[in-house]
Length: 130
Image 1 (cartoon, one colour):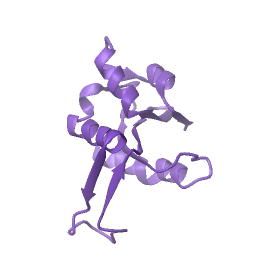
Image 2: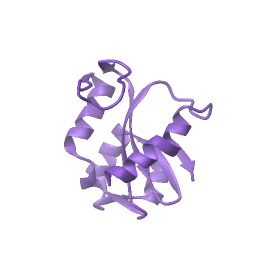
Image 3: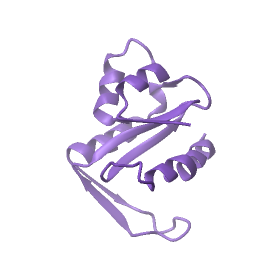
């Protein structure tokens, strides 16, 4: 799963982030892929990931990049305060960005155990067709 997410993040998502199509200010994100399925189980998003995104948006989040990380580091770490925070989900025919507050509300109120592509299209802030 990590390899599939890495391919998405270093390919189409990176290309979009660095393009003129990206009109968003700075933001933090957690990416998930459905591996070709039409829905993502809420349980695939770890609680600590939701907490970190929530902190970056609503309070403050500090992160130190490990000194033993591979490759050249752009800097030692980062601090986010009041920034946009998204869950990025790759579905078979598109990928989207859902605001962390919308995602938390969906998880809390949904009668399903997953978020379908149809529902993601309704609540996403950004949708990019493949």
